Image (cartoon, rainbow over all chains, first blue to last red; front, side, top):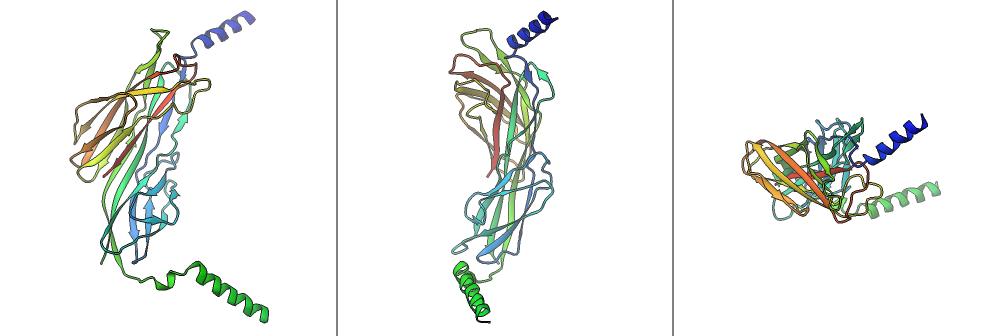
Length: 133
Length: 163
């Protein structure tokens, strides 16, 4: 009995490089951007992560052209998030990007497989134009 | 009463110090428009296969492809694919430096020819037309360490869509 267990253990050790767990990676970064009542100096952005899955929590970054009250904002699925931003509107219109940062993928190990996992981590951006009425 | 007046004076002074610009901010209405959006959604995870044919030079060979979809609402969306610097998570005992190679192509409203990228370099693809596209990515890996230690290896590629 002990020999059988030991034998199984040794086999498991020998095939360890091939006995790879199956990994599931799930993340969706669909989101919409709305802008509400901006003034000359400040604006508020409403980010609606409508289709984001519950197991992915990307943060949002303003790429350029505008300053955010907090550089990174955590988004949670189904939660409308208001973000305060400050724009320098002197001279011309401003165009900037609102992007999600890649979230750490959710990895599940339901069992063994003979393959190693290859996953995708997504990042998406919307382009917003801000101009004086 | 004297203490209360001192407290109110202190609060007023503190407000001026903390928000000096708010008193001068002009309230000029602006309009904001979302010009375009690009969405990347991971699809089916792929696999790599560990190859021990050459024990002195083991590698991860291509297995099944990993897929993702790209929905761009405006032309000329730029999709950037970046291989990782290492496996995720790091595998205990593995001290080598991996090098990733991959093949990627798009099909759908923008169909691109397949390109092969070696040596862990990034790749950018411009999707000229708006629409829905499916990206297909195969990956392989080699190591400078001479061997991969036993363990579960996962590779995560970053796919970014912007304009």
